[in-house]
Image 1 (cartoon, rainbow, N blue to C red):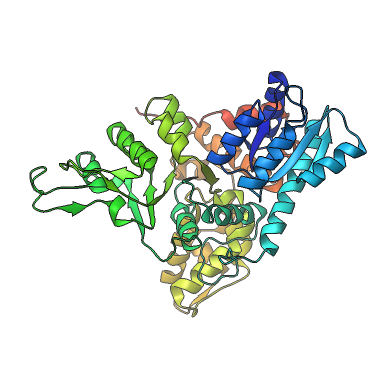
Image 2 (cartoon, one colour):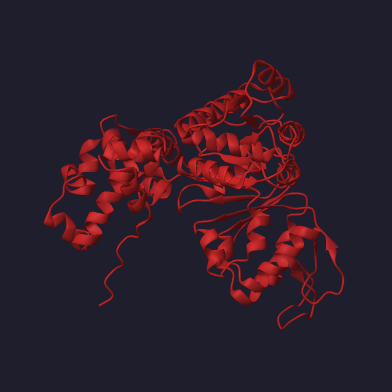
Length: 457
């Protein structure tokens, strides 16, 4: 998945290109002029910039290339042109374009060009020496590990975000490592020596949100016996991590938005504002776009937070990373004394892990607790699950044991197969549909279909 800026002055072409890229799993922000593109490049981070050369009667695509090189030199620029020639290619490359495509461009050709640009971007960032190197999966202190392509891209994206001062919005299911991702950004940023303060927004009583974030003056309310700094002031010079930011009440969202815009806060009961220099990293397991549509989250705050979006993949979407994670967890909790047998690894990789890394961690801790010798082998895993064969069997007994009805049981099985196909094809919906033996349209329908609701009777 990549974040792509699409610059195209023809509305229909813009819509078609956006749809094609989105169907490949990318996030696309589009605009119709080089001026709009320059503004967007100041507000958002992009992996790839795709721009038409000829817009509004001139070669405005060259302006887009220049703006991208100035504000986001790591982004790869792809140029679209209906007037392909050797002179055009030379000019585009001299100005800094990574490649150019001749109109009309097919979906397959565009997807291949974007993938090539992303591979080159990853190679560039791996080879370039910086003062703040990005950790790889061999770092013994780093739990945000995995050699899968998707995790390599996530780490590279986080390290790129670390070098900027933009706000970061991390999405993903519970247990995917959103706080670890936030800590990685902080640790490899210029703010690394200052405070990193995490706060779980869902754990703060609604009436105390404002006081917790912005602080209060003595006597501001009952129980305010002294002046108190809020979390934003305490994190001054460093990073404030707002976990589950979707839990913030609308009244506090307004004040947080103003604090982000003005870089100033006012304590509860105070008549003076105070300057704050804090970077905000937010995270949510909710779909905040959907929350905006439902009126539960402010659209302006969403756009203010979503400057650098990072999605943490579910563990079932990167099953090839499970053996490495399992061994690392065992090493950590046993202080290197226990050993996980190689026989266990294929069976662990078959588990759906709906609880993600947190669930894997729970299983590894349980195996350690049940082991007398410290050798964690297949017999121990078999004992925990009362027969490993039942892990993948489909039977009436297994359905009833999970307290499921037929609809929910089959929906879960379907989702597991779809996840496996998407993982195998690196998220390519067209290829995943072929693996499953169904049409592209059918897979899109199944991806959007909600799971059956539980019977409340």
